[in-house]
Image (cartoon, rainbow, N blue to C red; front, side):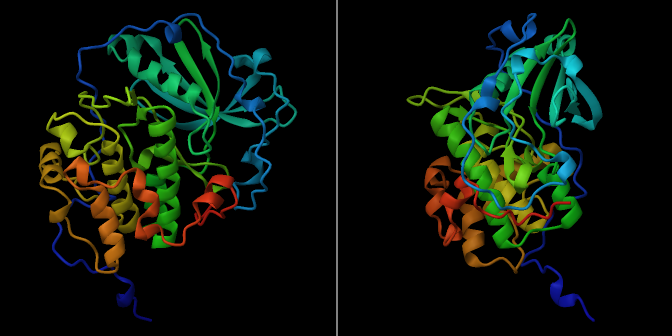
Length: 364
């Protein structure tokens, strides 16, 4: 049987390097010299977070789930003040970067042997790179966050050489890996994914006054019940709501908003630009702005979304939605009003927030 009808046909020639063949994604480090030294995360600190004792959501969640051996128990009987690093067994490595690695660990002391993600941060490397504020910011936001769309931080540990962040384990992997495995998503699945990210950003922006500044497919993790969670808050910035512009250059090439590249000052709308890039990627498995050379990526970003080709299987509403997020001008961009966009027509935000929506993602 012919498969020609299933092929994506592009309405214009695209010079993009392709989603799966892009060069290595290298985050840009903040270049601002206006840094304040912080001590609490790098001292001999072991801070207990009793978020596990919060009142459980009483709404029944009937959505798909991860394999039983990795499911979260939601057991509130863990007494975090009594837990030490010696109570965990290493399971496997989940990933890492220049200053840190993340391991899957199992709490053997507890009867349910629940699994967590343990981020191990090398103090020396962080201090040498003068990135201590970056990790301090991540810890502070995770401590304050109480959203089901952001990974929960349970506890921090500190030793002479390392700092540890113990968070919930999102064992479905990241969205980038999911796309590499399953290919582009249909609109209904993409709608669910983007809605989860919107809820995370809405919470960060309005409840915590935080700009994420590194929204991308690698930082959207698939957690329990197939819920997407926005992680990696190392570039986040807490701003004054009355004067929310900031000027630090940071992010990942291909997702960075034009106003960041042009040093015009950026605010919450920069996150929505990055979300638009994510939307384009999950619908096409291509990057709208990434090129083989970083400078060409920046040039393509500044030229804007109007120069980007869309596959002809995407309807007008979907194209309008992506373009609305990726406008060069922040004031034209979709933002808090995104919930009411036509692309989300018929989507139940209340069911998503209550945990009653079945995830369309393939979990195994």
